[in-house]
Amino acid sequence: MRLSTTSALRSASLAAICLSASAGALLAQGDMTVHRMGYNPGNNSDGFTTYGVNSGIAAYSVASQSCNIGNVNLIWSSGGGQTHPVISQNVYRLKGRRFEHLGQSWLKHGFCALCESGCGPRGQSGCASQLRVGCADTYSSSLNDGSGGGPKFTVFPTSGDHQHPDPNPTGNSTIRGRLQCDVADVNPSLNAGAVYFVEGMYVHYEDHQNGFAKNNATWRKIQFANNSSYTMQSASTVNHSQEVVLFGWQAEDPAVTIAEITNTNEGGSGVHGYYQVASRTWDNGNGTWDYTYVVNNQNSTQGAGAFRIPTGAGVSLTNVWFNDVDYHSGEPQDGTDWSMSQSTDFIAWDCPETYAQNINANAINWCTGYSFGFTADSAPVAGVGELDMFEPGVGNQLNFPLEGPGGLSTTQSTPYCFGVSGCPCGNPGGANEGCDNSTGSGSQLVTSGSAKVSADSLVLSASQAVPNASALFFGGTTQFPSGIAFGDGLLCAGGAITRLQIVPTNASGQATSSVAIAALDGSQAGETRYYQFWFRDTGAGSCGNGYNTSHGVSLTWEP
Image (cartoon, rainbow, N blue to C red; front, side, top):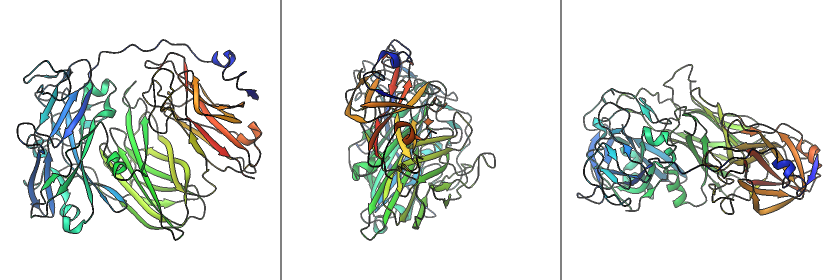
């Protein structure tokens, strides 16, 4: 059915299928962020400790400072309960065209929150069993020494829960439990031109239950001295608060694209798991292109067990590579490398074993980033990437926009009308998203399949919408480039509107079309159409209009 914009989507007849809801009230909640890494007031401005080398492994720890930017104090108890944070430390390297996770630490368990300045009007002082509103709390690098910490496998990072008692780290006393890096990876003589980053991330049960896990990471640039211990030093005093380290790669190379992905309600209602997938392509000028991808699991308990990159038939690959990060000091995770396979639709990497086969297989677990790369004889085109979850949970797969080596299995669609401005109630989304919905993210829309009218196999895939909601795909003959206010989102498609398919979202807030789109909207070769996703949203935190939308995508149909 084809309708005009004014008589359909902008009319009361379509709006009648949306539920009304009042806007959510401001809640009283604590919100912890990581303010600085390598910061140790009263001692030095860097706050790095280098412990030495054993068997080709160098060991470190880094100071960290957290802040409560919420409006309620956060419980910060010592001892065996879960009401204190655990702190992870990581080192990454950008070398040439590769961005790789080099090393990780065991976890510092927090205690005794101070009330330092630097985060807001603190109004308090001293050590307490709460991180007070506006207060900063610092652990020096010696206090963040992983040799006295706990492992990652006892932590449930989505909910923030963790188990006690923890086992002690094992191995040589110089390096056990500490932030470990291979000497070959940090030796300046072997890594000319490399750029290094340290990342810190906190997991706190109360903070995560409040829905604020996404802002708990910070990164800064570091360097290593050319001495026998390969001393860790500051390369910049600038801390990038509330960002995962993939944004460090993007800061060095603005051509890096980052897809932010939400595993909605993974830890319960409003408690989400977060992933980021960063990618970069280079035209080598000789008919080949280099591709690099990094999958970062920020705080998902389910973890990722497979990564698929869209591709086309006949694409040839060379220089295929993979990088993970070593677990150590008694962590049970297996370190077997992932295997790569190729089909006409995907370039896939898979964890060597499934969760049913081995719960300690080498999945992409929380606060780690795995890197993938190759050279292909085909240029990049837009498509849909896939992450398969490792552990059972709310969903089995996450989909997101991703470029891969082209072919008929991907489509040259162009996203537009992002929710970065003009959103109806001051609810802007992130990059490449629609306006924020009640999940805290904006919905995304990508295309796959063939853009040929003769094949009519175009597929529309929406993600980061409200879970288990009434929803539909629609298209138009014209566009509103910047969008116009429409419910809690923006209307991007205009002209003659076609309601393509009603597809309710699944438990992860995703939906995929399964109809012949060109036949439904009468598309002809050479015509450009504009597509969008509509979904019902009556959750707390919405604007109260009852529905929202993704951004738009435009596509020119081929014969």
